[in-house]
Length: 321
Image (tube, rainbow, N blue to C red; front, side, top):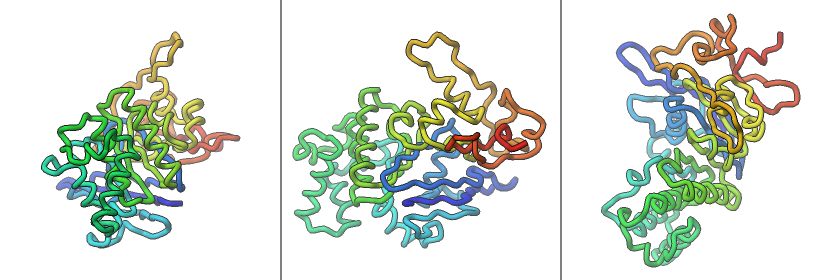
């Protein structure tokens, strides 16, 4: 496995106690695999991604668990050692490309700086690799665009440049946080195709963070569904989409309109709990139409979700009687 996250717990200390943003999360990603991480805003998706690259906003911290990259533990590295891993072995694509690009430098200069920092190539080789990256991500006329500034690119083109920066040092892991947000549908499709191609051709593992189940369906081999800081379902994309096993995932899938289907969309009543008000037992039980007594008292871990299924679900409905 390229990435292994084991029992990860992320806390934000406050005067009234620690707020747990990620609670006992475990998953792994293989070479060439795209794992989609999906859930509502506040589910803990981005915090999980930022904790992997050790860029949590203070006072956030990893309180328990471990993160391994190609078998090597990285969550306990010094800041200097982690800087060498970040960018070189782990690439990151942030949600807003404008905040990821320096408006004062040309695209070419930013790519050259990243390549020179991590790969130490000569000037001519650095420029050639930067141009090759722009071609790889579909930037037209890269020799001309090389000298342009971020404001001279459209949103979709800026996102392509950010992806080029993320893969500039040939990382083994790429974390993409909402890479298609605020893009036109046609541009979304191009970015999705690009991420799939990069994973397939380069053999990199990809962690794709999004709230869009359609993006997950088009891009990922497996999907991890998060709710209130925990994984509630983990399995192959086709299984999870066609036969979701957790009531929360059932609600997510029921809220997606289907072409030609005459049915009312499902609404998940209520809202995700605040970090300081996560209920006892299953965190989803106040909104769950299938809850029973055990759900209110005990919090379930991921368990096999039925005979013949490769999906795991954190739901007492699948517990052996």
